[in-house]
Image 1 (spheres, helix red, strand yellow):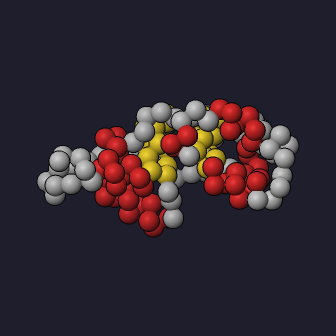
Image 2 (spheres, rainbow, N blue to C red; image 1 turned 30 degrees about the horizontal axis):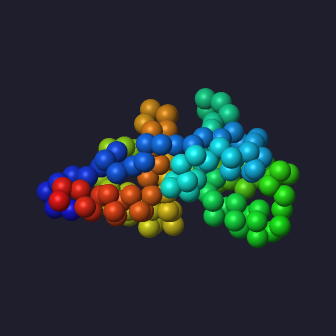
Image 3 (spheres, rainbow, N blue to C red; image 1 turned 90 degrees about the vertical axis):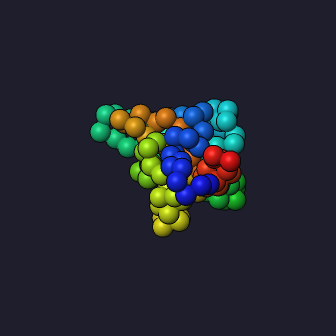
Length: 134
């Protein structure tokens, strides 16, 4: 990454997002996961003043699989993270990486004007961001 080239989150994010309702079962959520490379589902807002949530595959592994819970009997809202820290598409990827580091994040939804535009991960920041402009 050249020091003079500004690389923004929008340049490296994955625009393909899988969304799920918080009332869905974990099994239904996993069936809705079409873009496995994101390793997450964004949980829809219930109403205008609600916040987005996120269900990571690691959440399912730790809170459902490892605890031997039936995915048909666990709802997404029971194991998701909500609210989530989101980033804006115009954010410099260096600041996004610092934010991830500071809060222990691995990925975040990219939100603009209240709408999810994509998902960005550490992998995107490094592999797509640092090689941009070469």
